[in-house]
Length: 451
Image 1 (tube, rainbow, N blue to C red):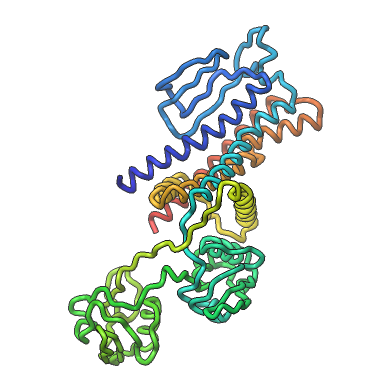
Image 2 (image 1 turned 120 degrees about the horizontal axis):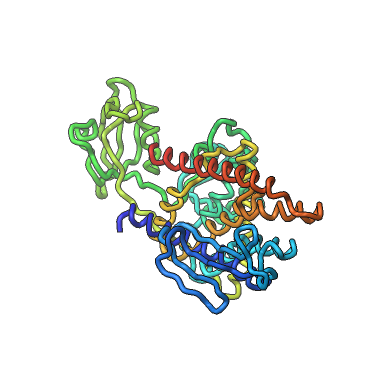
């Protein structure tokens, strides 16, 4: 399946599953409190299939599979027979209406916990939190290749994903972090990342790069994979398979050190001393770099060599037994909730870029890539999106569940419902805000693809 069609398919699966579960929450609680449900639709538009149950509820699958809805008996939306007035939504006490409105986000939270639980039972493959490459402020803080990250701040680290998420949080908040590591000899050491020194205008991606930590599994051995014909490297006799040992006496341990070493030592007409290992023999060569002339490429000196392709493989499995996975799922849900709320606050306060807001295109792409990584990673993705839907729907924006809850709270305080005029005005405001958020998210998606 191509990435394009795979993205569409997994987007439909994701939204269909999560929105149906959300609407089922409204449905089951409405039924529990005696409200008549007229229709439970998976999808929008013309029904492709439908049937009615003994309660008179129509269950339908509609043509546009990007959502769903529950329609309840309500005097504000049409005539209600006198004998069914007690089953009308608008006639129910305000507490009941609040419970029905809150049930959708609540079911998304339940789904989140269940998805995390199943993910831990299945076992999520990941990378061990072992540092493979050090640069930037991490090098200044004394980190070494081979250090195993144990704690970032107060958060215990089990995988590289845990470590990177904690580091990103610290970078966004410009908060210095104490990182506990076990060095190659097993001795625990505490190193401090001065994240408060990151300039205010630097976005999150650039800030994380400035930290300068990469996992061992992403290490790029300094082995030449390709030599460009007619290049300085070809003229010097460099060959695919050569392992770079040094460039002008600068030791090379990782391919990422190659470009900076070339730029640092290159001078017009000056030949660089290149030491390589070929087979079991160490060879000394001389190569004179040239200016990069490729269209659109960054200016600088090049030799005309490329790295050997290396596939990063998972070497850790985050897995628990069925019982042990229960508290771990709740902990994971709490941590992700806290991180999501912190990110929302940071975006509102201007500390985090609004570019972090993603739309349907990014969701589709991540759904496809998560599915490619296996069941556990897809469950992780579903849990995060379900949690995001719960939080989004609880925002006090008219048209969302949180907006309805706000109206009902006002009704509890003042003793009478919010006027229909105010509700209609709120719906327009809510729709405008929602469309603006969706527009910004779509703009960010397009910008990511374009760049």
